[in-house]
Length: 416
Image 1 (spheres, rainbow, N blue to C red):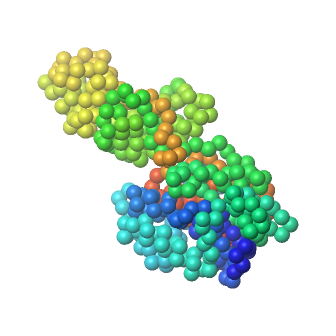
Image 2: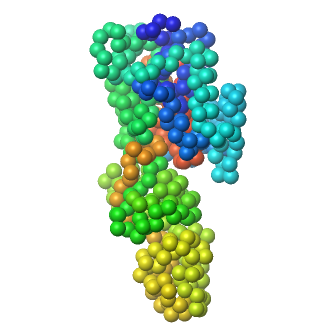
Image 3: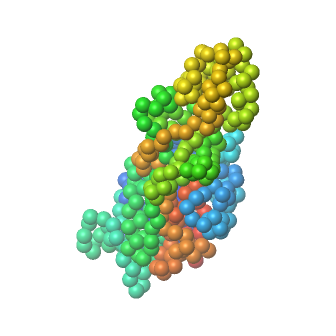
């Protein structure tokens, strides 16, 4: 294969990029397919995913697990390469997946390296040329395709020519793995728009003197809500909430983070984050429980239903002495405890940013691509897939499924 040209060039060799390059080469045997990536070592984001185990997908994936673009548009892409095909695809590569109680699917080896090695091997077996580090700094449309310029290296020797290009550059999340948002500039230069971007699946910060920050390491099952200024529930998630020295993390917090940040960054800082530490009890039922404590203290009662240190903070937030015998609790004291336990308003100050975000919210709108091919509507011969698109999913393998699905559609269409 010529070193400076290709029939199809994939910009970015992460999850979506590797998937796209594999299917481009498989769909068009003999075509010159290359994947260019700026990283010295490929797949860093795959290797750190799922605590190093790589949560490949979820056993049930549909458009309801995603935000950003039109649910109908997301559904059309997901249906082209659903979970069943993902399982079959990886099994054919020698990677068996196992389902955990949460519905998450991991490799049976519990090693992300298994997943990455299988993808790299599949790409090479299909004839894909993997070039790295080769960071694309600019892309220019020509009469017969594209010219890609290597970043910070002027001259003809730093040019790459391609008939078609697939943009799979990722977003801004986890920049230490190579995601720096450069793909957005490339998309804009080729005529696309990019929506506002925000960290997503990211821990949220609280004032350092907030009592929850003193509970670092304490985790509890909870329901987390985003409420409007009028008290209307905007969105809610169930799952573990982890207290940390900076604020809050855990699956429920990560899932809701993009909604709080998007609303705050849009100038709508009127929303409140509310945590229900006892999701199995209604406020009315909890009030009845507290009214019948007799000599039992609220601290003892709550400690049987949540971590002891958290129970103490609930009492502190409610302004109630945790050692007060139940029969001495005033009606106001009971109400304050109910509020603190089932609808604790937490004063979010922000997030830990892209450095700790697992994905980026925002990107190129799906209205600017043809969903059956992921080809650009504004730049013929350009396809887009993965995180560069305005699609972000919940924690649990959903974002990887979007990478596999959109990468398949873009790659197979470019190859065809």
